[in-house]
Image 1 (cartoon, rainbow, N blue to C red):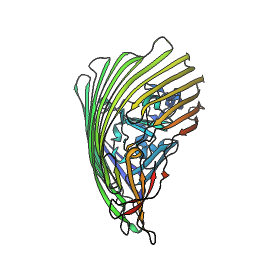
Image 2: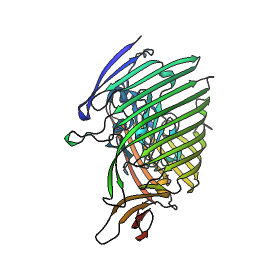
Image 3: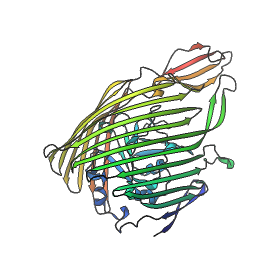
Length: 526
């Protein structure tokens, strides 16, 4: 049976009035309460997996965590992942221009924020070039998202380097939950026509699939005097997923997608001759794709083995430069419960990434091509002292990066539930951010000028091959209470101690003959 649902979305910037039309030929959902109908107690009992890599209740998670559900996504009318993240308390989201955002947690925000780990179905989407995220490349089909879990604070004990100030974990729906046909379209004065087409079906008993295609064209930001910035954004994306349960104990997942788009940008180019700066309107043709496979075997309700492998390739323009990167990643984890008081999870992984960075006068790298390997091992034990009352979680992740060597990231979390309606938790943990390609081998010619009776001066920002990891020691505590059926309280506090933060230090001015014309170099080195 076909349903037609017409929803008028909120008025947005530039007097945007978006209309979404969805033609859904899937099986009608069973009647039941939506998230809007749930009580506070039921919401706190919702399951999350990002804190301990197993299903736990939100109310029993010893971390500052928030969840964006599919119900939240439908109610807001947001059309991009960064805009959805505005719903999370304590997460800083700033829109820089039409296709770029600055997203961070607990400070250090900026376009190239580098202390936040972002995952989509277990696949890391941060770029080792600057240890951040190209948000305009993360155009997930929001109707396929099951939940977005956001941890404010370090999660390095399980997730590793760069999970310093937070972890964002986007989880999409299994193929079994997206059966039938689905079409949606959105249009308005800022949101030019966009559309998503999805088809799901069953190939055999316990074998389900979905395929989808989506595309959009978004207008650039408006300027004064009816002008328009060149920061428009368009993209086409094709994706699919297959889930197969050959036995009651096994689940196999294969998924992937490919995108191709155009991103506009206003860029101020630097030169060594007057006027020393030129305004450029650039258009980047970006593309990328990935394929991920996952096998999960359940030995029992408290024991499982999981193996995951993925390959990711993308090309991304930024400024007048570009990054092309290939990543291969494998991870194996095993969870079991020895005795009645322990819940142990351990595992290891290997990641190989290679890149090719396009050099320009403004931005160049040494070397232009690089290969990096990462080996990791983690172990965590949740010890229950009093069932449903008191638990202690201890663990650590050990990583070896060929450029900085070994890094140890331990953590201890204590959870106390004095009553069914109250939870207190505290934690001490260490996290690191490994130096990015930008930190270790970049040169940015930031500005040029010519003082009276002087040669041209060039200000350059230089990387440092000897850069070490930035470290964080975090002390956290929180309190949750269910004050009534519709009222709850969730408090979290933290004290962070950062060490070895990278900053620029001036060096002596020196003469430089290349590139021509000859000039005086004013270097600032990390």
